[in-house]
Amino acid sequence: MPSAVRVKRNPPGPRNLSVSVVRVIMEARKIILNELDEIAALVSRETGKPSAEAISMELAPGLDLMQHFARKSAHVIATSPHQCRTVLTMGRSSYEIYKPLGVVGIISP
Image 1: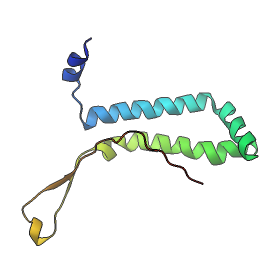
Image 2: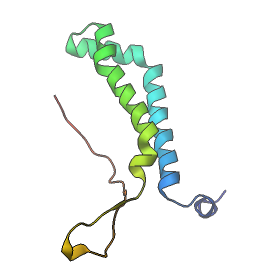
Image 3: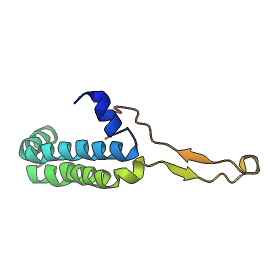
């Protein structure tokens, strides 16, 4: 099916974006679960932790967060109104609109 037809049938929007975000997050989670032993062994070698501790302290919290964000993505991505409470903005409306930035890297301890 040509991409123009797909766009017409599924126009980009919060609902379709949410579905694709959930799909990507859950697919990545499934890959991690399938390779859990190998990843735990790698973490164990690099940190000196036992494999069980690597799973429970390093991998499980990340997997839980992935599932949490997959469940909450529709709410996070949705356009939400904000009330303007100052005299200068009376009668105006303001909205928070989700626009993805792309890949963002985080280096943490």
